[in-house]
Length: 296
Image (cartoon, rainbow, N blue to C red; front, side, top):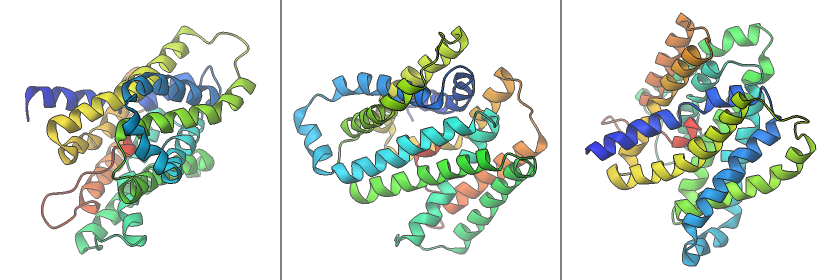
């Protein structure tokens, strides 16, 4: 891989590894609808001018139903649940639980008629990965955080469904205008709830910086860098960075927010990543890579 490829890879590992930290900070000062509106509206405003080619929008309009379904699972529902859950859970735990999305995707792909059968290796991966989820979620469930943990697991489910929709119904739709359309649709949906829960006072500088970074870096810039990475190294190799994101989320929470680094978190991360590698293998050869949705 070229130096440019490695730089883009490193950038994506960080950019989609830190949203959990920033969400945890942002929910201290704004409502969940305001947070989601900030991310989607700014992201749409940045991406739409980059996709002004009218011909590129024709496939988006022609496939508006699956585009809307993709937007619902990838952004509208997922970011609401994720942000609400982080009002109660640590950012590091949230990032680790979301890492289970590729495992859920592998199971859903097979259950919905996918062509890849559940080999013994993939079944072992599912078991190992789900064991990691149980290790992480168990103490929280016992400690009274059942609904926030459920919300995060529902986000992982959303992030598993979205790529199935994209692969089966949106393969011919250009990614940049589709992403801009999804963000724009989400912004329209959250405009009303955000206005109804707008903060009475200006949030702290810490919260405003987190919102700005979420919107500009982790949403708008993230997609631009991601598309550049795909052009540089190809789609399959580009998605390898999703295995790094959970570790970045864990480190960010521990270093910046002084969240606890426990043996259980490290062990859970190891099990989920090992399970993801095994569960997403297409053959007995090199492991396939997960969808980037699991990192956002």
